[in-house]
Amino acid sequence: MLTDSGNCMVDEALTILSVLASNHDAKVAIVKASTISVLIDLLRTGFPRTEENAAAILLAV
Image (cartoon, rainbow, N blue to C red; front, side, top):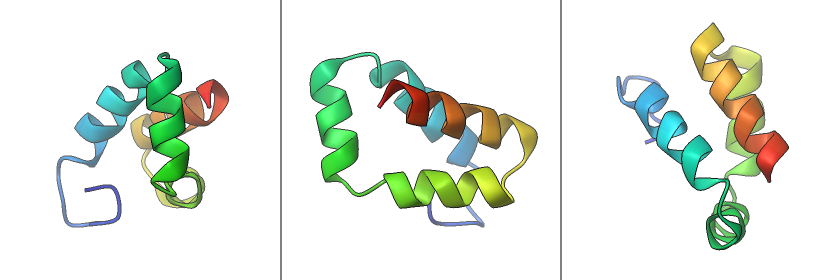
């Protein structure tokens, strides 16, 4: 969902991930899923809300 630029659910998915990132097991799953590079790309190309959520997830991880 995070890599599909035509998907209108990117912001919602990031919001859910940012909440989950407060849990240790979820942090491990986020890293194992190789989402770090996707989050960095969203920081560069996303809308303000997208960038904010991506930054929050990266800080939590």
